[in-house]
Length: 115
Length: 108
Image (tube, rainbow over all chains, first blue to last red; front, side, top):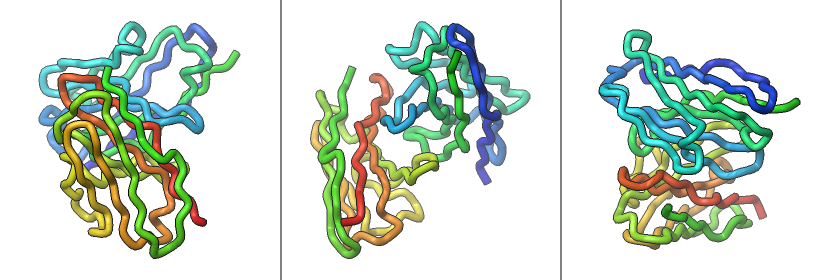
């Protein structure tokens, strides 16, 4: 069965970077797209970007494109999302999700940005 | 960027009621529209894609219609498990994949 298991919660200081991982199993990793979506407390879902796991092509939200980098390690069947120059507005639950539209979702990773 | 606007933002209903949520796009997204259900503290669950195709395992009381800029999600005969927040999302590959603002379905 398809499983997406994300790394654990993070607490970061403003200005720092965070890198969240998403370990995929139960399917051929390189055959699918992986999205990253975040949700600030009480707010709407916000699409951040995706990566084609096969060839590594990426597409990012215009709002975040200067600060977000999505990568993957095919040998580890893992996708990564790195967000730099963190502010308190980046406090959110971050999800990885497979398919287009996203059908399988990771359990979410809470990132708290606080001084 | 395409903007997705949902209405209403909150909806109060009773078990057994039929409810309709509307999602409007600022420009045409064709049929590249999905609906999700999100319960508190959980990740989203895909209900409908391609505007009207029911995801496997989703009860038939959920239905979606529309194309272009106006879409609806209807839940006929609300069940206790249906009280949640619903989001639309356009997923046209050539545009940022924006979510709507969400509609919270509450118990009246």
